[in-house]
Image 1 (cartoon, rainbow, N blue to C red):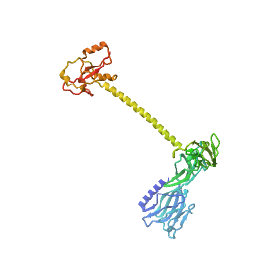
Image 2: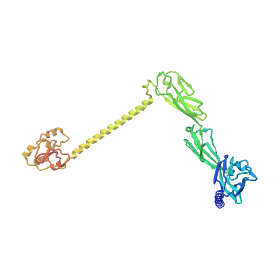
Image 3: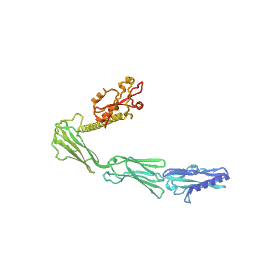
Image 4: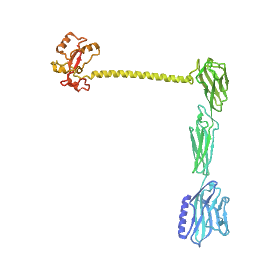
Length: 486
């Protein structure tokens, strides 16, 4: 409501100044924080020396009601009314002089309060021009009081721990309210609420909830409050209590008979609060002689014997609970190679075994592939023969052609069964009249050495991609062995 009224008064002042030469000049808005100081300017612009100031009155305008704040009169002097008397004053001393100067009647608010937020009117009473006034809107901000509280001083991590609030961040009595955020690596979630107050301020409360765990111990939790352009940071470190985490060290995997070194086992723990009690046990037996136990250490007082072999257990206890760790101790006849432990040997042996298995598998695969490839190539050699391998009528003998025929020009398909027969067949003449001999063979039945030669259609062979004959000056004649079958 104050802003439209200010605009109306300003327009009226402009109108009056344009017509009569007087104007009240003020800021449109002013702001300040609670407890701070703010100035409300008021300046009378007069272009007519005949116009005299009779009085200046400051008024507080709130919810449609006016309340006098301060008055400056050339005759009566200056007066500041309650409840502003202790906190409001005119800025220029000339206002309070015996012959005052009232052209500038700026007032100063000290120790600003939330109740001071309102519209303020500066009114000039003049003669003979009448009244001139203007208005300023004063906004009062309240910086929130920021506080971070560790709500759970003792945080206990248990296997079935529920969610708990570990910290609370407050931005109390802010106007406008502050903005609360969290910065942390913790796995949790904030729960934030705003609580309004009757004086116009708001309290923002944010709780950070987590399920306590051992990993949260000594982790930082930071609350960040942003208000206007200001940022406030507060950090705490969590103190999480948890039962011991136990690990036994000291066994190097190379305890052998009569080893002269000073050996022993140590029960290492991480706990909060610290461990208060240690207990050593040997599973399936009593602690062997020559062993000395002191808190978290187990020491051997003599050489290594077979009695030391077994599973050693360490129980560690604090106020939260008890946890255990164990180690299996083996005793060998002789020492392992220098720098090689039983565990290392086991790992190396496993790697070697895996390598052998992989090598055997690869070898089997390669052999199978080779055999398969061999069979495929052999089948291809057989199937690559042209289809013209068939019986043809006997040719007339040509002595001229025969004289030019070389042994390389004859293709012989060797049976895979009998090597000796193949060698014998190579002695046969390059041409054999099969017309009569083939019928004789049919009558007498097949025999192992019955191998014949047949003239082939060379036109097909000439176009074959796998030619095996040489080019002759005359017609090309090739021969192939034929094993007749009934």
